[in-house]
Picture (tube, rainbow, N blue to C red):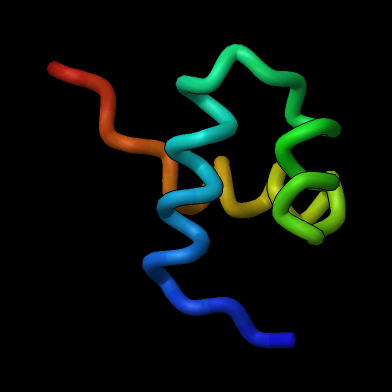
Length: 49
C-alpha cells in the first residue's frame, strides 16, 4: 500500500515526539519497523543550524 507524504511525515512526528517505542508506533500505524526507520531518515525535521 502506498502511503501519502502527509501520512509519512505524521508517522515520523509521532515516532520522534510521542515517547512510544518505534516498534509500538509502527505497529499502531500498521507499518513495518524498517519502513518507519526509512521514513525517519527521509522525513526527519531539519535540526536548527
